[in-house]
Image 1 (tube, rainbow, N blue to C red):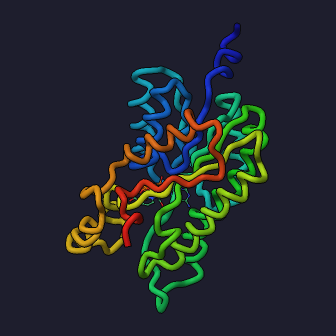
Image 2 (cartoon, rainbow, N blue to C red):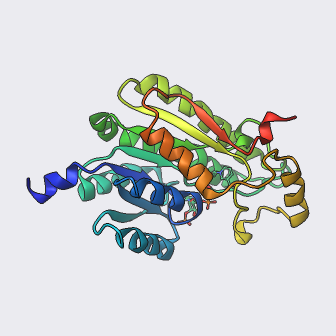
Amino acid sequence: MNSLSEKQHVKVALITGAAGRIGAQTARRLHETGMNIAIHYRNSEEKAMALKAELESTRPNSVATFQCDLNVTADLKGLVSEVESRFGRLDVLINNASSFYPTPVDQMSEEHWHDLVGSNMKAPLFLSQAAIPLLKQTHGCIVNLIDIHGFRPLKNHTIYSMAKAAKAMMVKSLARELAPEIRVNGVAPGAIEWPDADGQTGSSSEEQEKILARIPMQRKGEFDDIAKTIRFLVLDAPYITGEIITVDGGRTAQQ
Ligand SMILES: NC(=O)c1ccc[n+]([C@@H]2O[C@H](COP(=O)([O-])OP(=O)(O)OC[C@H]3O[C@@H](n4cnc5c(N)ncnc54)[C@H](OP(=O)(O)O)[C@@H]3O)[C@@H](O)[C@H]2O)c1
């Protein structure tokens, strides 16, 4: 067996927005199962390179990084082609990248719309479209990061909530269209680690206390709660498609 065909026998996962937080933890969880990982990033090059070095310390040549602004739809096919050139196949697409900030209705603009709908809905759709030929070859799967606020609105985040609601419908619609070759599922996190301080989310410690009081499990989620659910959908759920698993400590189970 030559080195290229050896390479082609190892499963490959492309994870968008994977330089940090949920995306990076998902990369760790899938990498430790033996997969090769395509880390996509937009601005976080340093973090992406650090994650590549961390993962490759246990398995050399198993990770590659790819830069792309996902809001440039014309570049999405190129991103998939670059992954194919590097690894020779694609088994898993994780649509994780997302922008997130408030858009109070009296302040929102078309620019906000393009950015929030772009990363949370349009790019996942067209990146999935670009990946379908490769995923069909491997009978692969797509996992989409939704949000409990795709089902119940987050105040002052109308555009984000609308985009996640549409992404949830995309899961079910693509699952019907792409079965039986490709499974399409989603994970809907509740409050996981608070967004980065520069994320302009407006979640003060008082608001964070209020959120925690509504979570039956009495803690916010951790990145690994989401990463392990994604790993389950990728590796242990061959009869699950069109499903969105809520991972929110029971928050939406109560009024
Ligand atoms: N964290 C939570 O509590 C929570 C709750 C509910 C749902 N979720 C969902 O879970 C997923 C991951 O959450 P997270 O908090 O880990 O994400 P995050 O850190 O807020 O964002 C992940 C990455 O998305 C990338 N991104 C944003 N817009 C992009 C664009 N136009 N093109 C390319 N990349 C873009 C950024 O990459 P660069 O830094 O490289 O620019 C960013 O680092 C998201 O879909 C989010 O909506 C998270």
